[in-house]
Length: 302
Image (cartoon, rainbow, N blue to C red; front, side, top):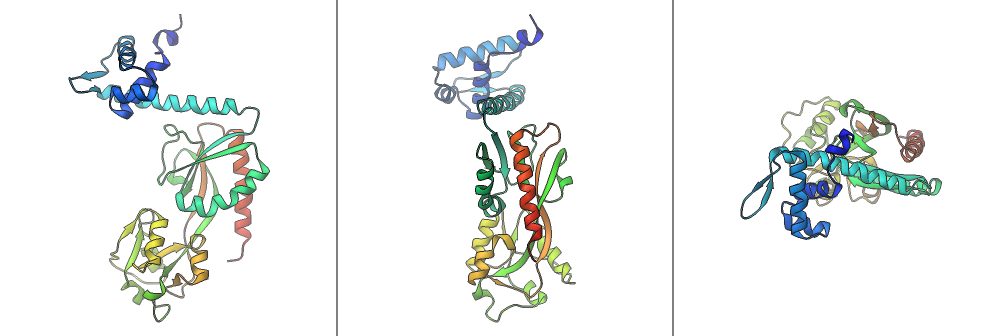
């Protein structure tokens, strides 16, 4: 008998361990796995015996995992995610497959999603599944094939990257905050400024591009562009917002330029995918299609 067959625990026991780590109680595990509590207990006890390691801390109220067991559960979760992805890809083998994509919420909804019908028309057999992620993550521990990323490619080690679009931003505010129209950079510094957490140096870079040393720049911060956009629309302050996000608001006059300065590029958006494994067919099609979208974006007048 091979070493793998002697040491690899049953899948049901591994699922029970992962669920206990995630849910925190044997009762919840039994409900999720559609088993009795006694069956869950037997699976966990058998797992402990087979591994020859203490996995659980038992008391009258709960069954808790040891620190070592929690680490093992994280490894099990990653393996189960890989098995699930493999099964999904196999079930779609006759078609184009599925792509699991991590997106930035505002850029994904405003830039990518309006373009996706064209991808669907060209590749109707490819399914694109999207999940929001605001920060870079490890492709080894998250079940994604690729991700949208803002910043430099080197900010996300171990990945390949395709540049999609430079982000061009300008200060915008509700009309009531600018009764006399655009103001100078010095006057702007004295208005309430709204900050986005993913661009902590954005305002400072903007003022420096205007030849000004702004000093401290206090003001409320927001974790997503959708919320800072609403704050600007309701007159809470001036926001440094990307042009792609505010086309409608600027065209209708709901937001007005706070200065006459041209838009400033603060970085770029990329598609990134792990360098440690070859891209699947679905990712290759999606990447090639996105490259065309990026070329069309570059051809637009500025």
